[in-house]
View 1 (cartoon, chains in turn blue, red):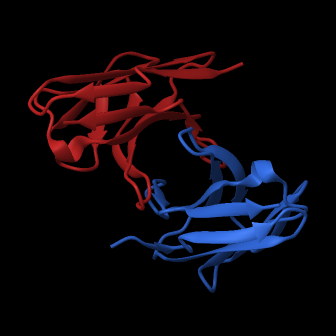
View 2 (spheres, helix red, strand yellow):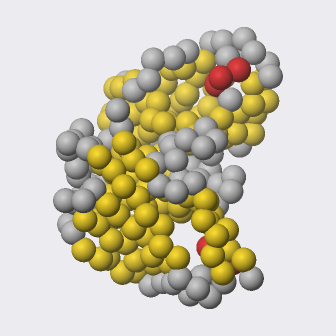
Length: 109
Length: 114
C-alpha cells in the first residue's frame, strides 16, 4: 500500500510557531511536497524537498530526512489566515504523487 | 501566465444520471493533466492522468472515464453516477519533465449525488 501519515488536526495560537509532521514509507522516492488548502478551495503549492535538510521560504520552512522517511512543515509568526489544511505528498518511483489525508490547522487568537 | 479553470463549481445530481466535468488550461502547451477526487478525511486520490491528446491513464477502476479531446482540455465523465461518486473533484496540470513536478490545481467541483 501507500503509507503516508500526518496528524489529523492541530491547534496553535496566533503569533506562535507550529510544526506539522509527515512520515512516509516507500521504496521509490522523488521528492516531498507540502500544499496548503483553505476550506472549499484547491490546494496551492508551498514547498518541495528532494534532498535532506531545511528549505526556508518566508514564514514557512520545510524539512526532509530521507533516511527516516520524515518531513515537517514549520510555520512561524502564525496568522489567522494560516488556518487551513496542510497536505503532505511524496512522489513515488513512477513520478506520481501519493497524498496524506491532510492536517487541519486551527489558529486561535 | 498560465491559468486553469474547471466547471461547474457545484453540482447536485441524482443517482444514475450522467456527469460531465470540464477543465481547461491556458498559457501553456502540452501540459500533463490530472483528475483527482478528494473525500473527507482521505488523501487526494488520482483518478486519471494524461500526457497528451487522447492519452489517458486510469489509476482506479470505477464508473468514471476521462477524455482529452484537445491539448488543453480534460473532461471527466460518467454514464451513471453512484452515491459513492460524491466528493470534491480537482483538475490539475503540471509541466512535463519539470524538476519539481509541481501541480497547479483548478478551483474544484463539488459533486453531491443523491
